[in-house]
Image (tube, rainbow, N blue to C red; front, top):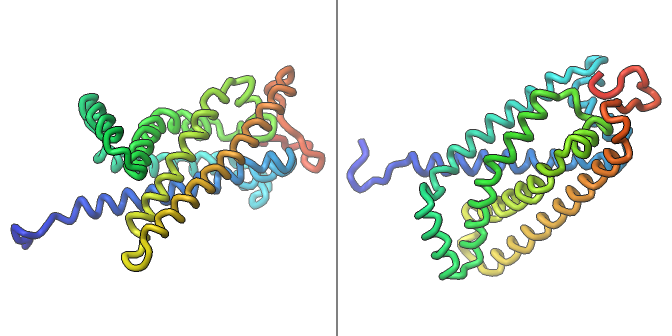
Length: 246
């Protein structure tokens, strides 16, 4: 039985669970970025990556529902993480206003980073579900031409451009704050370690923003060039009978 002086453990457990789901989502997002950027290596490479996740090279034919299953799992993880994060969000406009004034008054870098993470997290509530729902319900429309047509002719670049910046900013700050919370040593030069973690955060953020921007620009260029044939699937020479999504 817990005594009156003992603190409840559930807040700490929920906080740990929030950190764990955040790490899982952040790592997935970074790996996903590498797969998406395969378009920079050529259309055949991107086609191969897309068909790999559909099980084409294991089952001899594409199974787009495998992609839907993976996205559904990520969607569930995202919902869980968002629900846990909402515990720390201001609950009203008045609280947001006071928080904004407080952050401006103290002018503390790490507090400002936390504030930015709150804002980007709120934005992701709206941006991420649209993207995940589209991929989950239309997994067959992933490929050099299909993805490019969606981004350019379907005007999804309007969604992906802010999503690119927001999700990478949120993730980079999140990993930095987790390092401060769980990984910063209590002995030695903690100030120096904090500075190094912060530099690493900015390096990772800029690297992924550069990679993502180059990838998005490439998809837009292909989509622009392919606009008059939007809907046509890419057919690599060895697989002319398969195309994107079978």
